[in-house]
Amino acid sequence: MNYKLIIFDADGTLRYCTVEKQPCPNKDGEWALFPDVVQKLSSFNWVPPGDKSGVGYGIASNQGGVGSGYFSENMAMSLLEDTFRAAFGFSPAEDTVKMCPHIPYSGCSCRKPAPGMLEELMKLYKVTPEQVLFVGDRDDDMNAASNAGCDFQWISEFFGRNTAD
Ligand SMILES: [Mg+2]
Ligand SMILES: [Zn+2]
Image (cartoon, rainbow, N blue to C red; front, side, top):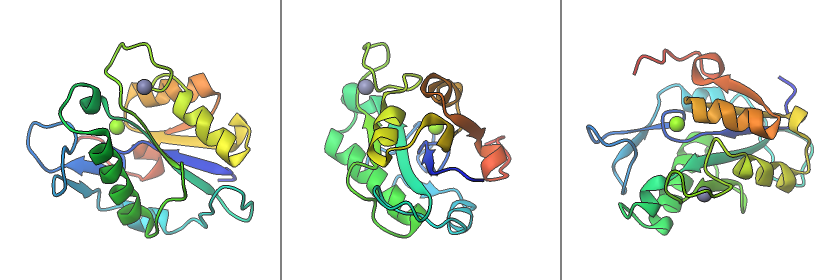
């Protein structure tokens, strides 16, 4: 893969919620990485914005639970940054972890399938859509990639993971 930037969805892609019947973690201790994530991500030479010697990285996550009042925006971001650190093995560069805190159908430009978060990351890394891959587990992810003009891979393809869970 010759992508300059690879962006990941979080829930259902990098991590899963360990609380039964809850779609995503609301606080610390409620999530775990999928077991194939660390090994797969360690095969890339990740670089922060401004460094062209490897592959850029980012997370783009819908966190509608913030808008619905289940948890705070700070908590949602802290959980995403913790997920990033566990998955990649280092701390994310500033602005590389994106989330939409808005409720569905609020008309915001960031909630996937809108392309807002992917576009912000492309701008940050100064790359064109053809240089970008987005990896996710939902139709909203696939459509966000399409709306941003990026390539898309399902988790089954990127991680070789069975999607039955
Ligand atoms: Mg997901
Ligand atoms: Zn939004």
